[in-house]
Image (cartoon, rainbow, N blue to C red; front, side, top):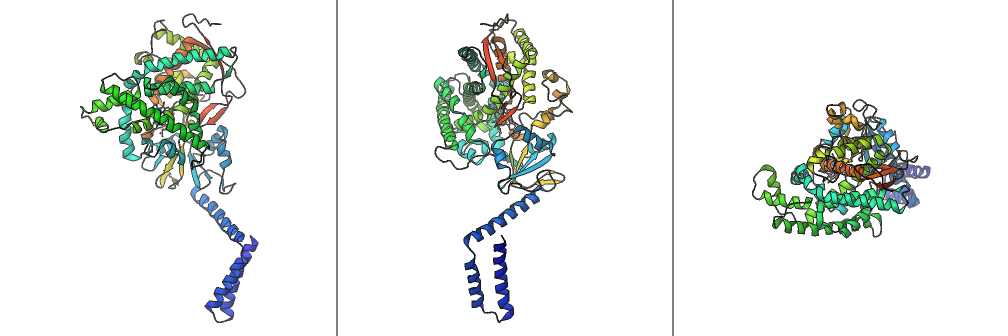
Length: 535
Ligand code: HEM
């Protein structure tokens, strides 16, 4: 550094010296300058630029940080806490949320602001004028640029209107029979899998991901998708999750994570394209919908003879490719979050036999003691206690901790702070769901806190599990119905045990959150009426 300063001083001394001591000869100055430049090696120039860059990086960070919480300067110049972000820890996130309503970090050139109060989170989620969802660069390549999820503003709102009809209670009830078949199959599968291991507890993390994938694919594509295709997608889907991690290389290089992820996404969308065509053919024959693709084709068909406000969004051709891309976003949005909920729900139920017994009582009562009564909208509507359990699991262990957004224009997010354009702004969902003012003993699992009229059930503003505003989760009703049906059936027909380890209650962050020990379970068949467990 001192050599560089020396060289710079040399230039100044040489040029000014000649100017003062003699008549300025432009030729002399140029040749002096040339001589001095000759003495500066490339590495000195490089180091100078690097130092200036580092200073700029720190100053720019300080200006953007303003008065909000966060390190006073970037401890690791340029990269910031990049290495920590490769292996995110729940405790580190929590420490950040506790550090202030708004806090910040800077990773490489990205300035990241974290909002940790309920009201700030809601304000951000409901300000589409200032923010839009932030996606990793590679997501656009994997999900394809033409995908509807990348639309913004009015275009996005209009497109959503064409999809909302696929997830109404009425539409969802049509998918239940196919979903119930998947549940029956996996009850069998989980018991067999446990039997093969002499009913000793074993890791069920992968099995939970698989059942979630199978349930979604059946709901979305019905019988158009074959068992082999379901198995293939379920087996390979984790490659898409890995490719879309927040920190990933933005260019797709063969045989890297992103390359494998894109291959699986393309393969899956190809399957969905075929399914879309079959759904269109069936719709033309007037066959009743049993899956999302059928329901979509029917909405398009019915809209031709309807003039209501929402039908106009269906008055156009939806290509097989476009439909396949949308179905892929449903799978993408659902897979990790649903798997997270599934793991916690099965773990907690095994650890809380008092709660599980109440579910069993309710499930038999609403079926009038006939366990063979199939799932239906009416039946699920009566699952009051079971639904409270699902809701409490979502509150206690919300699968999505934070939702990254990007600032489109300077955003006065708080009276004393404006989020600069281009920064990442992350509303957090966890703190609102563990707010002791609304949820007494927030770190305890208490399903009864959700009885009608209770403070928890009245505090709608705190219920941020599915986000809020124009991008609020499209699948939230689907989640509540599917999980009430699923846990109800498993509770009646199986008995499962959980091996508690020191890591069972530790939260592992992998896109969403999971028990850190990957969930040790074992399943046995159970007589739904007598409760007898089969050997
Ligand atoms: C436990 C399960 C789930 C949780 C916790 C969850 C949570 C979320 C959250 C927090 C968002 C972002 C909302 C925002 O930005 O305000 C979201 C968006 C979304 N979710 Fe879910 N989700 C779940 C399951 C599903 C399922 C099963 C589907 C589809 C069937 C789905 C479809 C979507 C879609 C399409 C979006 C983006 C909506 C848009 O940009 O307009 N999600 N979800």
